Length: 373
Image (cartoon, rainbow, N blue to C red):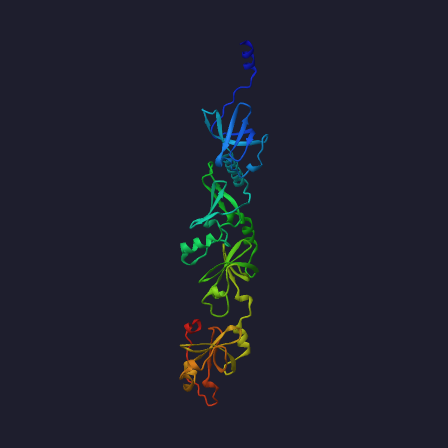
């Protein structure tokens, strides 16, 4: 008994473990069904099922003799084994790393695995994260007419599976609320761009959104709007006909109000109205292809895509009868210019005025809707 008492007195104290504690141990057995871990010669831990999964450990490579870290999730009084989890240990390390990312503002890469109407969902080894719509950069932000929820979800669904550069902007201790921001990842670039750009600058960007009132263009981490009136010199009633998402375009900055940036595409092109004003005057005869026949008359396509209207009142009576069979789009037609308003963007043409005996009557007013028809 004295020898036993002596050995007991010199033996290492029995260590106690608590649930949730991360412990290190030496692998004794490792196979597809379980991993047995020797915990400093005093206890044996067992890892089974999905607790063998880990984003930081390749369990297929774990072999006897390896040192691994796991987390205690329970014990079994009957078998004397301590239940461990590699997966939960991996999650704990991940949460700790996310806290570090939050503190350092480090940019990391995440891949969304699902989308809902509020944003993109991230699964990091069982830890759930989220990129709200409001935290997406202009390139990925779902700009849809009337904020249609179904269209927003359709847009976000196309982003699932794509890598995103983000910053952690919120993470709680338990890792139950982790928010990522793509906007924050380009914050410095965006701030620098706002300080350096100025009215008159010509920049290259990418079309990031198309709505009825214009095109959204992203460049240098910022976004500006090309209003429908600044897309082209002609009348634009459908911006979708002039660009598609992802197109590279060159634009000019025409206004900066705080973070609101106004852009123009048309101002980088020659004003076709001025070109026509330099080339023609009232009384000149033009020959141009027929653009279309409408309720107002015949439209001819002049230089620069400008439309000139031969009003019904300026078409000879014999031609008006069955005119739909006499006018074909693309065919050349001669007409005389009888009005030219480059400011109001209206050109009035006449077939009757081609007659040497033509007597001008009251010049018909070209309605605005005729130009947008």
